[in-house]
Image (tube, rainbow, N blue to C red; front, top):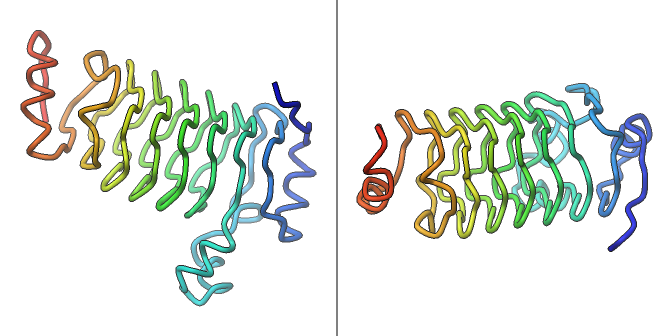
Length: 199
């Protein structure tokens, strides 16, 4: 097991503001509340710095792979193109976060509160969203291969990504006005035939 470097919330903030973007294998102070916009660059700040150039935005993005960010509390986080492979976000509050085009393979979002979060075109292969609150969260064009949605709240969510048919736990997830691809409707209807399912 790889040892993680303990990091206080204040140290994390200071390093972010100093321009550091490599936060691999850290253990952030549990339950730390990040302040927006002072800590995380807002969308306007990203575009001021990069001129809206997607390659530069990608270069400016964070890498928190293998880190423990469990219990992190932040609203309207703007971290596009983030690399967060096998990162632990369990019980985090990440409402309205933007992780579009991110690499979040095997990330752990168990029990996280992520209403209206964006995973547009993100790779969340093998990620764990069990018991996560994902109301109105979008996974449009995201790779959902082997994702775990056990007991997740998917009301109003957009699941029009790819490989939804390989996702786990859909039979116990909560659906209401959930958006899915036409080709997935039969699969879900069959899986949930004994439950009241609405899309």
